[in-house]
Length: 507
RNA sequence: GGGCCGUUAGCUCAAUUGGCAGAGCAACCGGCUUUUAACCGGUGAGUUCAGGGUUCGAGUCCCUGACGGCCCA
Image 1 (cartoon, rainbow, N blue to C red):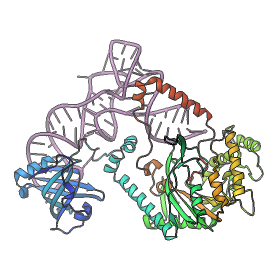
Image 2: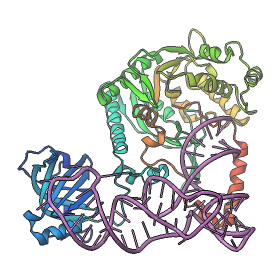
Image 3: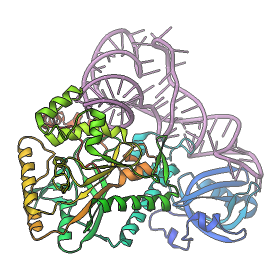
Image 4: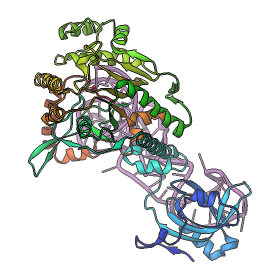
């Protein structure tokens, strides 16, 4: 007898279905075992007195069948016609193996648990339109196994990372996403408004200064794995909203972090992927080989001919870069131009995993200078496939020097560079209470997952990436005046833009 | 921000020089008892992204805009 759910009050799955996935409960069961399964119908083949269908859940698909001989004509006809692709069903039946060798549940009972009102995407062609896949990710997940598998892999990798850090005595903490000053990286922030306080806040661009405050408080080995926001352009290797892992360890220096982060990446590769090489966009990336150490200024000199140990002032650097034919923004600072030069001439060549070390001191106001050469930093990045995957340094822990460097940043900001760091008195004050020597590290989790899963863009490793409002055009039709005003305002803001829109702290 | 390409049925895609807007899958009806994208026959299904223009006639040509993709900045 067919039981059909009519609304959400129907008890369905709570009334005794196997809680194992369909593939575990039935796909691996011995013939003759009776199972009770619930899942979504993804294929339904009617052929006379026999029906074969596949039901799907989180783990995969299992075949079920209906037989006229076993169910009787009336019940068989009713059940066979009741189901359409996309419906959720509960099936009770005995497991058997078909002539073609497929484990199948011969249904003795079938309940429609809920119906689909819309037709699912084509069972063979699937859903391939990029825009549809991203805007309606649930359909992408439903019909594209690769997509489902990529998010499973992401979760396993993140889980392994957490375990690695926990095993090494790191404490996971959470720090504010709404901040009074956007600090910890050179990037433009998103601004939001607190109604009750009547005050604007920034969405964090990095958790760095808060994690350092935690270290001052003696929780001196901490990490945070979470979202950061940068108000910049979209491209295949940048997201406005991205997941970054940052950690800080007291009494470590940047070289400790070089060893540690490599071990962590290899642990993920070994335990989640079972291989230390991956193929990204047809290129084999070998994480198991040594990651060579490349000196930042030596690489810039090698690829651009400009020696940054000699070219130390802004006008000369601007002139030299212009000679290379690169477009130079008038408002760019020395650090901004160095960064531009590196990104244009060096970074595209860094394909295999490598450590880029000893960046010029101007680049990061929160990093410690090398004792041997104060013009450079005790700092490294891991670059893979031309992407900055990791950024880390020995931290500056001297409050006097920190204040001086952040005041410099404020001057640059006043001069028009809006990718400088903001001065936070609270942070300096915390530092004045004494900060242990330490090294911190940031790693772009979305980029790591994209590289390891051969995802063509970062948007493929994020479930619901930011998209433009698809109905914007319709709204414009009904409120043309408002839209015109909005566009004019946006144009003004754009005119003040400087730099390439690409952040220094692109980890 | 610029250049190029795209947007047609729920999904995947056709449509000749500007001349009746189509196919497969899905849905619906019928047939078929071991299928594997099952198969066979039939039926219904469209704001051709939106708005304007040229034309006897526009999915197709022109203009504006929206959204997306690729490349560049």
